[in-house]
Length: 425
Ligand SMILES: Cc1cc2nc3c(=O)[nH]c(=O)nc-3n(C[C@H](O)[C@H](O)[C@H](O)COP(=O)(O)OP(=O)(O)OC[C@H]3O[C@@H](n4cnc5c(N)ncnc54)[C@H](O)[C@@H]3O)c2cc1C
Image 1 (cartoon, rainbow, N blue to C red):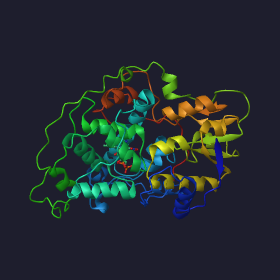
Image 2 (tube, rainbow, N blue to C red; image 1 turned 45 degrees about the vertical axis):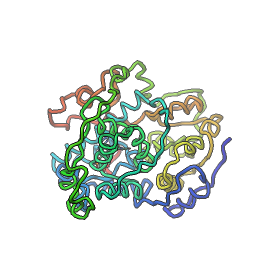
Image 3 (cartoon, rainbow, N blue to C red; image 1 turned 60 degrees about the vertical axis):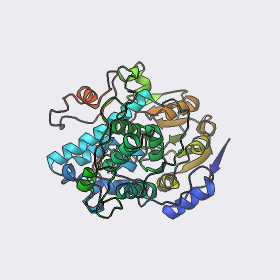
């Protein structure tokens, strides 16, 4: 069963009200509201303001906030409001060459995470389930500040994500997948692809050494935090932690070779998937909410349809702020073209319709697409199309997909596969 929902009004308050009224029981009502706004106009504003001056030096700063050099683009990239080729192009003259280079390397990490997840997909469910009650020691200033920011605002710079992930796994000896779920509940950019890779790398379960989180990083990247901490004289992370033994997970043979590249990468041009009816509606998902989404852009006169997957949301119990971000983006979309909003099962809502969609490199999309049978599927805007070769390590993936070794420069030769429209101003 699927029910049609009313159109959300613009703005974060209206989005919060919409979530409370229509998605009751399907999220974690923790009362937190993110200052990050959802919608294409906010994504474009953030991209137009991209300034990479000093990015290399400041990208790992955590506090104070004005010293933080990261772009803050990730929630928009996560939900397809900004695609990687567009961001790549925009970066070209956003700062000195070395900073642009460093930033583009990070975009390639995102692409790499997506390639891995598209190929390997879901992990088997954990037997013990997720408790999502991490029980952090918030008497430590570094833990309190970063978990507060994560839980209240739904954001955290990469450096602080490493701190928490390393503390959780190496020091507290907890399961990295519980930590992954905890982040996924709160992060506005929470994606299985990049979140999972981040936790695997930080915890060392991928057979590399785990990241070591010590007081030294806090003093360097968040000056002032230690001075006001209860543990200033007896810091529990003064010294490196003993490294636990992990079952290496890179033994997964799918990382060495892709036996179904088409399923991983999707079509390389608009392809009929099933049937030959001209599309009557564009199916959009949490991966593809942007105006530059290939299917939305190719069918400007068609309505869009988005389905809140009731069973999925009931299981995930995401923080309300994640849903508010999505609803605000959907409300903006509804201001530009007719939008159908459904609650229920995506296939029940759409499988009798003639649908156009953009391929998404996630298992959930493939599963639903198999039932909805879209008439026309547009290609995912890859920065580099996946190949079938070994992607067990970023350096190996990089050499094959970028065409130079990781330690060779420059990256200018890498032209995104997808053409992009003009720069965002
Ligand atoms: C434990 C852990 C969990 C993470 N979970 C997520 C997640 O759920 N979703 C997510 O998008 N990223 C995740 N990351 C990667 C990274 O921390 C975020 O992408 C970054 O902090 C986003 O902020 P930004 O846009 O200001 O980054 P910037 O430094 O401005 O980077 C620009 C873009 O590059 C990409 N990028 C940067 N660093 C990485 C990275 N290490 N891996 C993959 N892509 C990267 C992102 O798309 C980012 O928006 C995680 C990292 C760790 C260590």
